[in-house]
Length: 165
Image 1 (cartoon, rainbow, N blue to C red):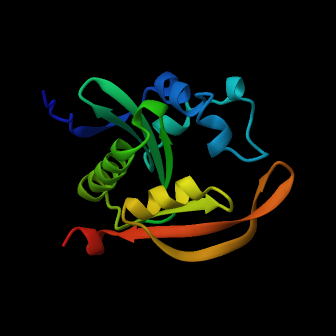
Image 2: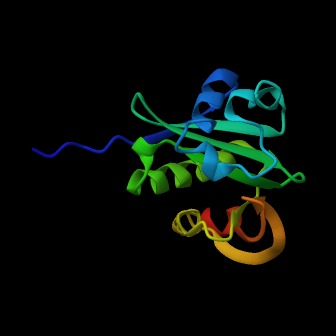
């Protein structure tokens, strides 16, 4: 019997406890933090979720929580995305969630461009960003410290005009 896939939906949240539980998940936090990050139990999202230029977007498939995206503005039209998808979302649904989050931002905010940084050595994140429609736009050398080592970061981006024609 075939079962229809649940469509990914996106909603903005200000639930700091839920955001913290996603970001500090043991399979996520080590991958999304650098050497300057606090221990997971000290991570606090309570101020960030209230900020008008910070968007925490929950991704769901039906009632199933897939994770969240945090986007913050660099200027009036440029937003940086940080992706925290739970293990149950890894695989094809992750790309569906990434594209849905991008569409939500372009439809509901002044955002015209989304960018992300991927540290050297994180091939999965790089491939994920590319599958979500982002293109390599540059390299920031020696800009991320992990395990005491300075790493380069790839800068990837996607413009509203290229995906919302």
